[in-house]
Image 1 (cartoon, rainbow, N blue to C red):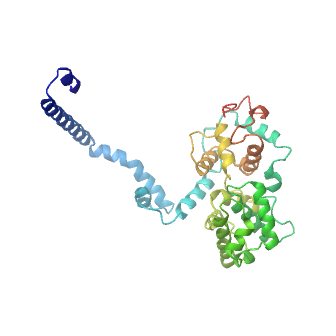
Image 2 (spheres, rainbow, N blue to C red):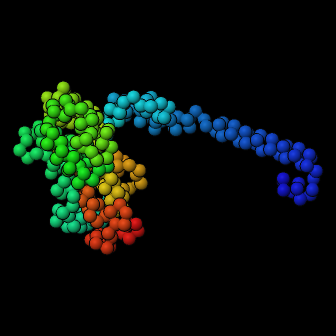
Image 3 (cartoon, rainbow, N blue to C red):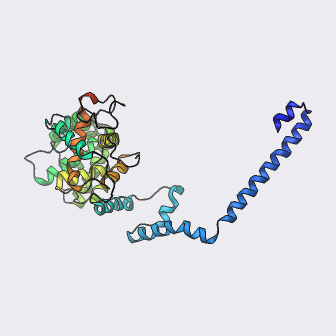
Length: 327
C-alpha cells in the first residue's frame, strides 16, 4: 500500500496521513484477533490445560517440595537448593537404571570396545584420580576425607595438578582437624595452581570445620549430607559415595562423560549440562554399569576422545560412532 502511494507520486503530507490510517487499521485488526483468541479459551479448556500442572503440584507436595515456589521460577532467587538436591537423589534411587524403554542402538558394543581400549589403564586418571590419591596407611575415616578433598580439588583441574596439590596438603597434614585450623591463605598456597584455588581453599576450610563439628571428623555417608558441604556438588557426591563408602547412588558425570555420551548418541534429547546428562543416562543405563562409567569414559576422554581434535582414527568405535570424524 505504501509502495503504491510512492509509485503514484502522492504528496508527502497526504501519503503520511494515509499511512497512519493504515497503521491504525492494522492495530485494530490485531486487537480483534487477540480478543477472539481469549474468548476461545473456555473454562473447560482452561481446566484441561491446568490439569497437568496440578498433578505435578500434587506429586511435588508428596515429596515435600513447594509447588508455589517452583511455579514462581525466575521471579526471585532461590533461598535453598536442598529440595532440588533431595529430589535429584530420590529420582536417582527411584530410577535405579532401565526405567525407560528407550536405549541407544549399539551402546553395549560401544561400551565393550571402550573397555578394550582402557585395558592398559595408562590414562592420568588411572594413577592420579580420586581413587588413587588417599594415603594407604591412614585410618579409614581419613582415607574417606582424602577422597572428598581430591574430588573438591579436581573440578576444572587436570589430574596432574590435583595430585601435586594433594601431595602438598599431605605434607602439611591432611586431616579435617588440621585443615579446619589452617588459614585460607596458607591453604591457598598449598593447593595452587588448581582451578579457582582461592575459592577452593575457602571451601576446604569451611567443609573441614563442618566435618569436625557435625560428623566427628568423618565425611557424610549420604548424598544429601555431602552436597550440604561447601564446594560439593552432585557429581562429587555420587563419586564420593562410590569411592569412599562403596555405595553406588548415581553416575558421576563430569565434562568427559558429558561430552562422550553425547557424541556416542547415548542421550535421547540434547542436554546442556552434566547434571541433565546424568539424569538422562540413569533413565536407561543398567545400574550395574553406573560405577565403572566415570572411570572408563574419563580415561577414554583423556587419551582418545579429546575435546578438540579427537583421535577417531585410533578409536575402535570409529565404524559405529555417529560422531566419528566430525569434530
